[in-house]
Amino acid sequence: MHGWIIIDKPHGLGSTQAVSAVKRALRQSGAGKWKVGHGGTLDPLATGVLPIAIGEATKLAGRMLDSDKIYDFTVAFGVQTDTLDLEGKEIAASEHRPTLADVEAVLPRFTGPIEQAPPAYSAILIDGQRAYDLARAGQEVEMKTRAVTIHALSITGQEPEGPELEENRLASVTLTAHVSKGTYIRSLARDIALALGTVGHVTMLRRVKAGPFTLESAISLDKLNEAARGGGIAQCMLPLTAGLDDIPALPVSPDDALALRQGKVLMGKPHTGLMLAMDGQTPVALVEASGPEIRVVRGFNL
Image (cartoon, rainbow, N blue to C red; front, top):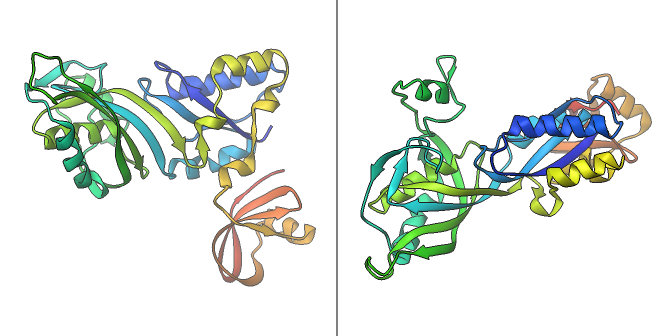
């Protein structure tokens, strides 16, 4: 049981709760206890792709946190909340509504390398405390800006206002964003609304891709539990190597595989970058090549 289960996380469920649900499913299926972790937090409000690593795949969870993500999200204009989503309380309002042309014109300003301030309601540590704990306690939380990259940002839908308002004005817009690690979609929505001369908050957030994993390989918790009751949970799993689809394979001999498992440095043909050392069909280690030297980054006990 070393691999990935990709959950289509439902609304209202936290990422750690999803991990607990997978642990229960593993026990129910008769697989016993395994180390389980997730590859990137999703807010309870959000739905979509949540990679769950099992067994030796948990050694790759940190790498998954560093991967790019793709989100669909809806920004409702006219109200800003303290949490920057529909679960918060209103802290600002505006009568102004943008047009579709306004939105199209402003999106290039949020494409490429940008600086953004994370939401006060986030898990970022400030002097040893979570920002959301400080915010909930009523403390003023100053969030420092951080550099992130928006690789692509496009409009996928829009909802016009009622007939009593000016024609072609939008109540909301749905966008798709391909973003680097550390990007907060709620902050992106806030900043887009402000750039449009109004305020806004996120009403829908769905992650459609995390690293190499997409919704095509994701399953619901109901499907997972059904498989667990039938003892077929292994059929829901992707192999450990599925989290390394972008890494070239490095075939190694059994002797070299043993040396890598012992943490030794191999000498080989000049290479540069990460590779996955494979002994036949068995993953041995994630290795870093620098010239002829090949060093272990993460070893797998398989």
